[in-house]
Image 1: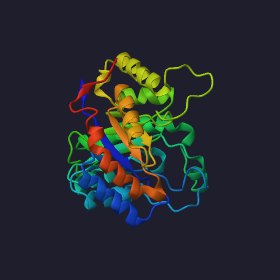
Image 2: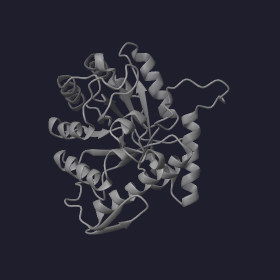
Image 3: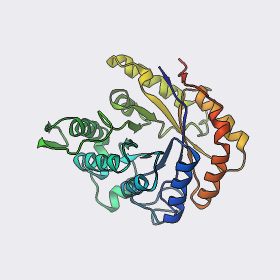
Length: 301
């Protein structure tokens, strides 16, 4: 199965102003990018601590929906423990309608301990099991008139999820995953695997084999798919790539390398202080990136 090469950009909503965010969404929409992304955290992450400004991810997606006309929108990725699945199903359906069916639904098991501690959010110790149940509930609420579910973590009784999403049977599901158990979840539920926890740009750890770890993980997804009888080529592979907006040839080379490795969905992460400048530079490079794959190409085996 061949997949088109699609290119997006991402400004998480941390250390960014509302004007910066709106500018990025406009660039993504008008320059012809395939998708534009935020992320989902309640406290800032990375260097500098958790108290820097950060906006809420699903509010941003609703704003993205009405601020754009053609580009697809999403969050890489929603933290499953932050909201009950019935709420998440409703949020996603709402944003899908606001955008006219342009939502890419990103989700992961969540990981930020500081957020769970400061807000007393439970479930981090059983996050894979919770995510698995949530995915079953999300699909049920998106596709069935009434839905019952009795799991270890969640219970729904004769539950209604209306309106259904514009996209049928539901928006594409992107799962950010990096661990062995999570790769099993990817094989069963994902339309797209996002290589969270194993970014293809990460340096190789000392003593690691020459083959890059994300490629190895992609191969393990193939194995998990084979174990449950799913065509592994039905799962697209996604990579997030940092860029400072300076060396265009280096970016084109990196994107080409990831494409050869089967990562047909690529998202350039914008540095918040220079996000608009880098997005403009990326827009000027978009034609060169498109030339890497003028037509769909199959994922290598």
